[in-house]
Length: 484
Image (cartoon, rainbow, N blue to C red):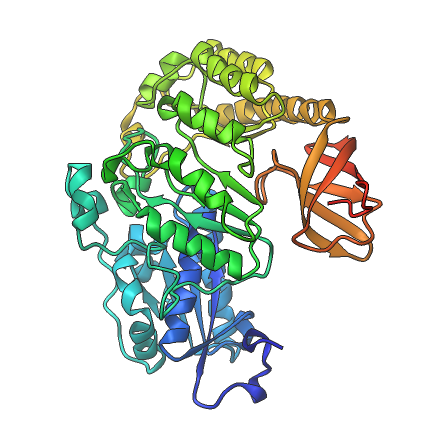
């Protein structure tokens, strides 16, 4: 039994227990694992369940309204546990806390403290004082873009707290795995230099700054030693990686190095900006053994007029050209994207352009989001806003189309040979993900005739059926009978 599973009576004497609850994206998962390691190094016992903890830390998401609501609801639930005799304190961290700080603290008395990113390096000290009942001054929000130099090349020397950037190897490992699965996110960079009119992320995550390749490779080796078989490279904008380090092609150089690490079987890159996706990067992702031919392309729309109002580049034709470049090199590549429906000024013709593009592009997964104003963004001040009912109607229309198109795309994959990373073996049901399926949001593959496989195996299987975006595949047995 690990220390995270110890019942209260068996905990090491003198250790205050803490549970971390993580909401939002994979980048937040990395940040929580850094917080967990810092807390353990500072003398806390990390436990799994909030009900078993002396204190609960909620790592919030502040991206869109639904994510904010989930974060607030989670803080309220932790507050209810506290009121019923559970944890002694509840602490909010993460993007919502960084973005709203004192306002969040004032509106949520259930949170004993609201801490920002600058508190992360001293999180154990902060939490110890909170548990002792000492009053904390709520985090004061600021535009974190102003903390780094305007010139990207000057940023690596700046002394700024960057969650998820602490070295994960050496005498003190500032990352502690919160799950034992064979996939782990690995942070490439933080922040974003783009000025999309609908997005507030750069204001609370800051300007773009890359992690040094040595830190990334070191953390990858550490993760492989922890049993990780798939590295999921995450950032706000992976196509910008290296621009502040003097080499925009660093990702192309580093990907093959990551695949050569002992124990790593697959490397996956997330969040590519279409306007920054270079032919060399496409070729590296599509053709390097061990790198998933997987393209997470942030299109957001397909109408040139709407994209310009978003302060983005491209149109339906250029995006289809990018999709074609990918499929020329890797016909079976996975391609996913997100789109925003109902942006201010979006006409029926714009919406039809988006629908026509989606039909032509044959993407594997599409996240469909109805537009909503975000505090402090340029688009929030735009005229020609659609009413909520119209946005909801358009979002439903596009969602139904996407469901039909992605189901057909999955059906088209029947007959393909897949490389499936096994992630779950329970009660005779074996599930995993093929190369075109990203973690959590892109569907799963259920394996038939896979009695002897284990979690973490990468196996060959033939797709025999589909169910929505999910696939069913039959394990292929090689000459040795190993099936892998």
